[in-house]
Image (cartoon, rainbow, N blue to C red):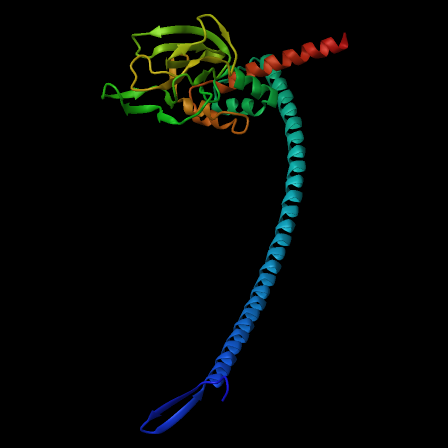
Length: 316
C-alpha cells in the first residue's frame, strides 16, 4: 500500500501484520478519549467546587445575619442599661441628699439633748462614706494619695511586706512598693500637697528622696530617683512631675521606691494605687486605722461651704 508501513511479527503461533496507519488511528482515538475524560473530570470538579462555594457563602451570610441580630440586641440592651443607670444614679443622688439632711437633723437633735455620737465607730464611718457625692469623692481622691506614682508603668519588682533585701541579702520588712523603670522615666505626685523634703538622703539609703505632705495626716515618699524637679516647701498638685526614676542610694538597679503613711504609720500602697471612682469603696475595707468617716465629713463641709457661697453670689 502506498504511503503505508506494514509490520509483520512471526512466532510459533504464526504471523501477525500491523498497519502503521491503523496504529496511529488507535493512538489518536485513545488520546482524544483521554482528553475528553480530563475535560469531563475538570468540569465535574468545577461544578463541585461551585456547589461548595455556594454552601460556604450561604453559611457566611447566615452567620453575618445572626451576628447583626445579636449586635442589634446588644446595642438595645446597652442603651436600656444606660437609661436604667441614669435613673438609678438620679435616685441615688436624691437618696444621698435625703440621708445627708436626716444626718444633719439627727446631729442637731443629739446636740440639743447632749448626746455625743461615737464618730470612730465602723458603722458610722460607713454611713458617712455612703453619703459622698461624686464631687466630694473627687475632692477626697485629690487630697489623698491615689493612682500610680510613675507615668510609664513597667511592672512591680518588689511588693509591700517581708522580703530579702536585694543588696544586703538580709530579711527585712519592705514598707513600700518598688516600680520598675528606666533612667529618666517621670515620677509623678499621687496627691496634691507640699514638699516636706527634697534632696539626697544618705542615712536612709533612698538616695535622691522626695517626701510630700498631704492633707489629713497623709504623706508619700519617693526614693532612689536620678534627678529631682521640686524643692522643699514647694506646693505640688496631683499628677505633677517631681523627678525621674534612678538608682541612687542603696539600690541594685533603676527603680522607684514608693511609700504611703498616715500619722507616722506605714500603709500598704496597693489599695491607694488602685483607688479611683470605679472602685471607690474598696479602700475603706482594705485600709484600717484611718478615720474615713471623719474625713468624709470634712469633705462634705467643704462642699457645703462652696455651695453656700455660690448660692449667696447668685442671690446678690
